[in-house]
Length: 358
Image (tube, rainbow, N blue to C red; front, side, top):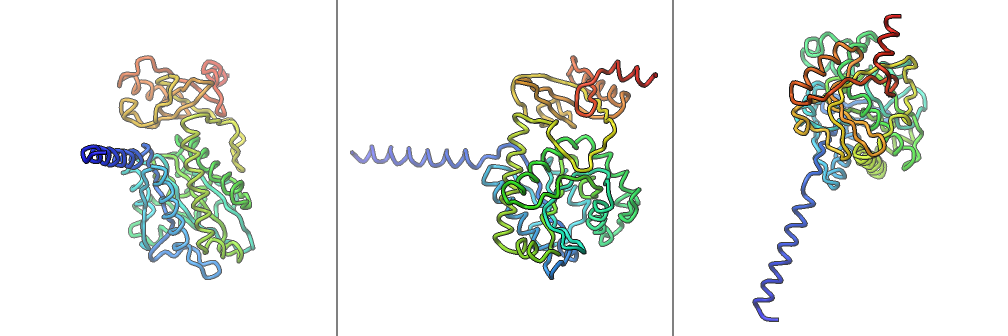
């Protein structure tokens, strides 16, 4: 082989190496914000002498590393031991136009409780869930001007929580999907006690404009679980379970998503009506990005058989739905129309209106 052939072969290898690195360095289009709870002057809980803020930071950084290897774009609310306002954490997520927000914590209890649990924003159905939210929300007392910043919210008042749920309502379905995947990963992969997916009023979840989940990785107050969470092995395994679940959540979002198999331990038993504006239908999955839908936000999808149905907006009354319909048509979705769902199943609008009249 002559020198010219050697040069061409070397050039080819260099080109292939460059292209392969280019391909694998590209983002898959999804952004995930990882929030390590507490930090700085807020140590979190100190069960058995451990520091929650340090444990969750280690887990958060490890989750981020694993997701980056899967080509996710990862944004952190903190990467070191610093105090970050709850409002600022949500702001970081919103400014990055993230697709998912994950807040990582460790739990505490006066008993020997143990196990991992996940939370989405909602009305707590029992005092235990309220106490967990109250503990996490009390961080605002360390912030300046918290009364103005959080519109007079009082973590100690159960009635204050009602105002929290309205803003995140339209992302609840996808938040539940993500939380469900994380919970299943803890139970199936790590054999952790299943404390299930629950709803409670967390401030840090209120102000995010995307699917959001708060994770309680376990109880530092439990001697065995505290040792596990404080160990490199425990932190690595928890991070792997969380990153695997996040990846599966996005894969399912692009494929077979089932809303009927989800279970929430404190789900509301009364009928839930939801109006959505269907703006498009197709056989291919389109990422729910505003630039793909004429800059509309508050997007969602449902898949029936091989058909994807794309929706804009979510409301519990028909007047707001009509406003959303006008908005959708004004940007170019001329064939858009309103659909009603009762408990996540398609329901007749005429029947609904007749029931209201009667």
